[in-house]
Amino acid sequence: MTLNTPALSAALAQHLEGRSGIARVWESACVHLSDRLQCTRVSLWLYSGERDALDQLCLLDARTKRFASGMRLSRGDFPEYFQALRESDVIDAPSARTHPATACFGDAYFLPADIHSLLDRLVFDAGEPVAVICCEHCAAPRTWSEQDHEILAAVAHEIGQAFTLARSTHVA
Image (cartoon, rainbow, N blue to C red; front, side, top):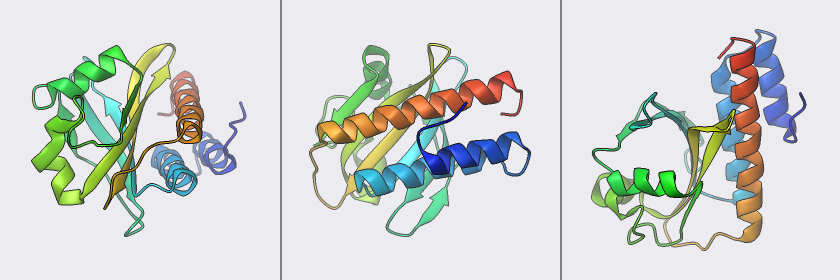
C-alpha cells in the first residue's frame, strides 16, 4: 500500500520492516501537516476503547520543533468537544476560545499554549473513528481554508490506512 505523502509512506514502510517504531509514522504526519498548513501545533490523539478519552500519541510544536506525548483528554472534562466529534468528523474553530465545541478547553489548554484557532478531523480505521488529528494556530485567530481542509482530510485518510495496515500486520 502506497501513501500519498512520501515521508509518511517511508516512515510506515520502515515501521513495517521493523526499522523504526510507529511513533515515527505519527511524527511524520505531524511534521507534514505543520509544514503544509503553516500551523503552530499538530497532534494525533488515540481514542480509548469506549471513546470516552483521547490519549496524545504525538504533539509537534513548530515554535520549538519538539515532540511531546502523554496527555489525556476525557469526555467527563470536555463533554462538548467529545459530543461534537460524535456529530461530525471535522471541527473547524477559527475562534477556538468561543466555539461551542472547543470553548471548554479555555483556561486549561488554550491559554497556556496561546491557542486561538483549531481544525480537528477524525481518523477512521475500518469505518470506525480511532483517532483525532488536531491542528492548532497560536498567537492570533486564523480562518482555515478549503485547501487546509483537503490536506487534513488526505492525511487523516493516510493515517487511517496506517492504522489499518498496522492492525492487519499486528505491528501497531
